[in-house]
Length: 74
Figure (cartoon, one colour):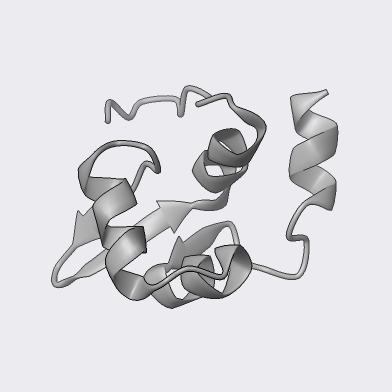
């Protein structure tokens, strides 16, 4: 089921999202996105000065699952 959800949810967005993308998709503030990443509710990776959020992590958050990403420990 998760692969079906992944293929259909947010299909117009790239596999790796920026904070602004998450803001737009969830309708929340930038501060709330950063807080959700800091508390581990949404998994994100800091690259330089920016955070990148794998789309699969956002979908997992929304459906109540946090899928494992091969080779990555959050």
